[in-house]
Amino acid sequence: MSISQHNIYRFASFELNSAERTLRRSGEPLQIAPRVFDTLHLLVRNNGHILSKERLLDEVWEGSFVEENNLAQNISMLRKLLGDTGGSKFIETVPKFGYRFIAPVEIGEVENEPGGKNAPATGQGMGSGTQEGSPASGTFHTGPKPDTRYVQNGDVNIAYQVLGDGEIDLVFVMGWVSHMEYFWEEPHFASFLQKLASFSRLILFDKRGTGLSDRVPLSELPTLEQRMEDVHAVMDAVGSERAVLIGVSEGGPMCSLFAATYPERTAGVVMIGTYAKRIRDDDYPWGVSSEDRDAFFDLMMRDWGKPVGIEERAPSLAGDAEFREWWATYLRMGASPGAAVALTKMNAEIDVRSVLPSIRVPSLVIHRRGDLCLKVEEGRYVASKIPGCKYLELDGIDHLPFVGEQGEILDAIEGFLADVQEKHEYDRVLATVLGVVLSAEAGPETLGKLRDQIRRQIGLFKGTEVNAGETELLATFDGPARAIRCAASINSVGDRRGWPVGTGLHTGECDHFQGNYSGFAVELARRIASSAMPGETVVSRTVKDLVAGSGLTFEDIGVASFEGIEGGWRLFKVAG
Image (tube, rainbow, N blue to C red):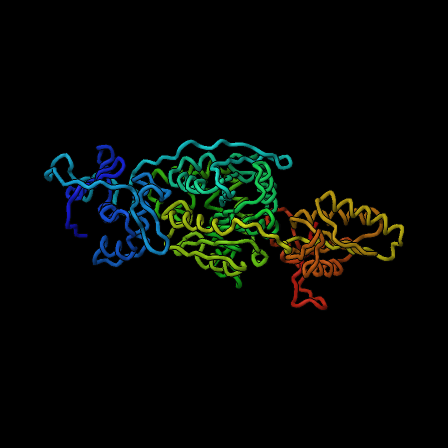
């Protein structure tokens, strides 16, 4: 890059000398890679004006062919160097256009001769200094950390934090494992969260079994259903009636299920670098193979305690020693090796493809085009299945949203919030419908007693009765695992009474009006129940796919067709 004018530019505590190619903070020289310096110089020279990405690429890398990700990395390094990782103090992202330097700048003439006190700190001969393409050093100002509090959900304590005082609530759902207090030890992450809190009331939590929440036995790690209940508990604890949920990676499927099941509590949903199904099949060719997943399980068991998975999740910082140490410690603090493997195996079973069309709240899916952990096709797929979903595809190779160019993501979320303030009434919700078929041979008196016992079980498992006849009952549940356990309990009641009953379940979208449930999902559950043998519980594939990690096992009993209902339905019998 040729620089035709030489000046000293002063902003905040910084001084940029274009002739000596130095950058100082409070008089102390900072190490900065050559093209990172050129990027900053060009932005500062054009203070207050938008510079397009094309112009920045042409002038900083003149005569070289590079991708936009190179520019994004330079911007990220500058924000770290300047203590501006939220993107609001010095360098502003202008969506779809480029970048603008927004801090006040004073311009003075160069007074020092080459070789004086402003000797170069860039280019060759920097010794152990920052190399081009690696993160530059810098100071972050993260402010006070929020207090950690606890709420009890059942007999498990869930840790949560709240910061910010915006008009809309954001519930941040981190993927894989988490440790809230260690979020704040990583400057990129801390700045990302602080920026979210600058335009919202931000609610953070650690899912049960991880981080600061209660540890639980490996057999009791949280299913999607339990994670939803934990979110409910945290929202209730902080007095949040409605919130926008932000799900990162495997946090996306849980947010999808929550939004479809509880639209009245969900103002909107944002999913970043997410997926619908983890394991590859013919209908979902972007997932990982079972063999690759098994190899990753082996790697976790062998190397947990090291920066496992960093190359796919944060490739732009994978060579940064401090970030590698933080990531390794974060994982160790977030979960034990056994819990981490068990959670990852559970996540591998997740399949929310059938849930996505039931999401009726405002939705935004953000995915980086070069994401090395979850393919961009997965984000496109998720967005394509949600009615009215907005989709934003960005440049970059990092999976973690706080690594790389985070300003574009933050700007998109802030803009999305402006469209979700209005409260809507929803007459369709996702529910698991339980059908119970009784034997007419039992006689009126026995049937009456049996129905009373079944209603008691429905109440104990927090279900809602929606219909009852002489020889059948129908009930809805917020979660499929609880509905299956209710069905098992009802089967036991029938066995004890000497009149075995058949039960069937399906999870789907129901019409919901004045407490009544109707529609296709209700009818299908009734038909599935009628196909069950006495003492059996039969479920649709949708139900099976949503209970990953519940410990429930199933036997495939084939594809069934029902008169008046289009298509064939693969059914499974609950085993044991």
